[in-house]
Length: 221
Image (cartoon, rainbow, N blue to C red; front, top):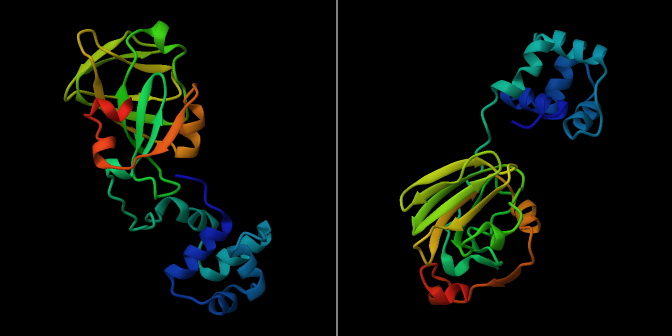
């Protein structure tokens, strides 16, 4: 969980108790203008002021700062239906990527469909590395997963792998297969992943479901 600011913690305490800024000011002895600036991270409090805040509210500082660990995550109520014909297509020498749910910004995960194209490490080149972790599920065909610290492993339809994305990794077409389609869910944002494909890419918005369907060879040609 990301580190929370002092302002976020104080605001959470205030809202949890149903207080206005004026009510919290009356209880703590800290001016409204000061509390407002603290909540908006424009001002911080000295140790003495934090002690005063805790004493007046009947909360030891250890309890005040524990709010970050105990707080329930906020419900964003975001949702996005991923359709192939609305995806962002990125074609490279290694893979054809279909980025799904692109209208949502700052996603915690990046869902993709990937059509694997290369058959050898020589053709693939340097292994990929990028922030985060990822889950890969083989929808059709079979792939050989090459990683920096492990022997290659073959995955067939219905099998999956979870890996550290900062470790060098690459997916190759398994022998005897002409194509393979995988679902890839990466714990990194698009602005981190797209520049780190390690190869030139051309991007185009798909115009129709027929053009973009991942099982159609014309979708990647």
